[in-house]
Length: 196
Length: 196
Image (tube, rainbow over all chains, first blue to last red; front, top):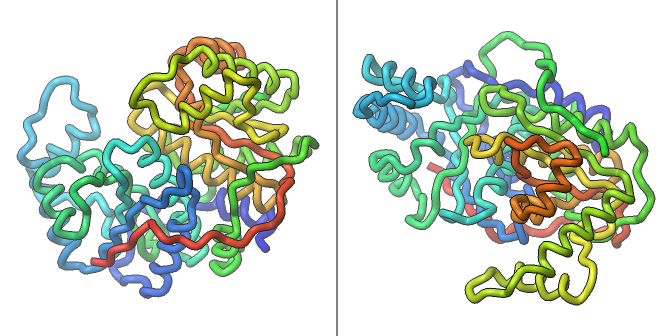
């Protein structure tokens, strides 16, 4: 059994990885990570989270092109969030890789409009991030697939990859070997706590 | 460090607890659980998840009354989800405890309308569920506080308990010692996986 001390250490030392090695982690490690996600709880135990695991480098390249195209064709409008404006500007200049070079991507999806779609997928992603870390791998939650999920070219790509029509992307995890210096746990200055 | 085998065992054997002992777990265990939640990742590392930890039995009793009142005063309408109809009927007949007798409740909240409010809080809740288990405690995600979060009596209670006006409840965790027989991991029949 895992002691609270060891688990807390794992949780505290997990960091988002923003630079990955090109080498693909072994299939059995990826499968264990996905299983950890499948064992997250779900509302009413509905188990409607879907996992689309992309390890084909060809498909990841296509996906990169698709997403770059979505942004490159997007007009910049007043009031847009600055990170989106940044992505549009980057995409107009050249290919954008929001996966930080990761050789694997796990996209989670769930029933469109379902009240527990986002929480259920998020719990699965959290389990997968911890599991990745215990496997010696790094992960980073990539929000762009959710935020751009209804852009028709991305939607087409995802449906070809196995996403049913009545489901939507709720979150994604870039995965691979870490290619950045080890870093200390980042202190929590926010996340306030009130005891009642 | 936690091995992948041990972590997977922890993740797989976690079950939602639906019967708790009345005894309050020690304060330091609760604090470690909250810390595990605070160390979950957040979008852009914004750290805007708020944790409201209720261990006052008097306050938990008040909260029970508040929520029972919300449902007892709600007219049953056609098309309502069956679980809500069940809660309304129960509340019209007597007090309802959606916390399954848990002596502690952690409510997570985040900025109203923030795109990462629900995912960030969900990741925090997942970490807390795992941490609770490693402490020998049980937990259960309670969705009703989120679903009923805008009912004025619940809103008033929460603001008195420390919830700022511009934040909303995103999820809650009932916590305590487990008072139900140990149970096997529940097989995953849903949560389909596609490899690409």
